[in-house]
Image (cartoon, rainbow, N blue to C red; front, top):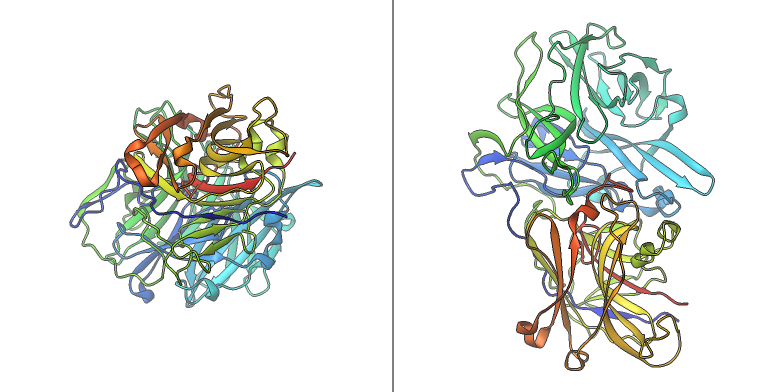
Length: 567
């Protein structure tokens, strides 16, 4: 029988070193959505109190399709998730590959509703499959108001990164990477035959298409060059939606390739207007510089201003730290229960409260694994251990690709410099029970500091019998990472005077390249001890560079994990 373990998380903070300046009367600054917010799509809705809504890829993290809303383009609030019901997409729990799940959605407003088109990629033991999804809502501030997803078969279309566009006659079109377009019935998700409409400027890696209608032209904007240092945005236009399309002589219209700028990998852009009629473009980017070695926050959402005169091509300002010198009038009056993106957290798990809405899971969470303030344990989060541990992946690649559930809850890393901590009350009853914190990219790329019950006989640490003693164990799982460092687990016995009280565990990013892992007894925090260091390049691409690190209460970015690994 698996034991139940109580983890008290008293403090989780992230501070400093983000490029975002959210002080009153500040210029709009990048990234507008710090942390892993890749493949952004945004739309302005005047009818809903002049609010701009954005969504991003969520891959295998749940809940899926986060919806951020803002009235000033500076303060962005997590107002809902469009995919929250496990039974509507059970494939989350069947997929093997780290980069599977929800890819590159487009969000659009039409006829009183927000509509999202996206795809789910699923790799299981029979191979890889994909299917399209359409969700809708007339109330984006409530998870439950989003419709169950309608599925469509990608075999009828051209592939990934679907875009939604309504023509003047009301006909809806779905345009996909490739680049092809086809009609779609949003009530039934039925598709018309696909038509190839443009080969781009290079003919390679044509992704993230978006169609716009302006001044009797159809404008088609796409990403080219692949997600990396060659990423770019190109645009073309035509008098007919099916072409032929004329390439903008200024292409690529947006890129930072072959520059020394801090923001790199600029691509997968979208266009929208604000209440004043000004044009803006969202895009993804790395905060990496041209070396592209240390960017543990992965692909973040940036903003740039666009000048688009009547009958002319749109002109994009290059992406930089300051989006616009225009002073934004702060407006944080946004509906929805979630927090504002990028704010620090202090979570005490008050009785009657829910888990923070910005916390995420790896695939769907197991029922009963996370309980806020259970009876007799107020202001604590009770975690029930899983059989599988996130540290299995350091042994070999195959071990990291099982689909068993993991007790893992995470928060995205949003700042270059931060200090993150949890208070753990841990009284294991079996050998190899482990609780801890992790800087986590995926199952085979992470740094994990665990508090683990190991046999007192250190000549046989795999034993499942006999007496045990608490140890700190630091493991780096590095399969496929950029630097691919050799890793030997670090074992440090927990001091006897710590063993019967709560322990505070820390991840501290003191610079851009390394994390410091440490611990202290809650009763005497001055006795903090450094246990290990982790290289941020490990979380900056390689095996699966789509996502970017989480900072959960032990998870990819930062997360907390709890497991019992039995021999």
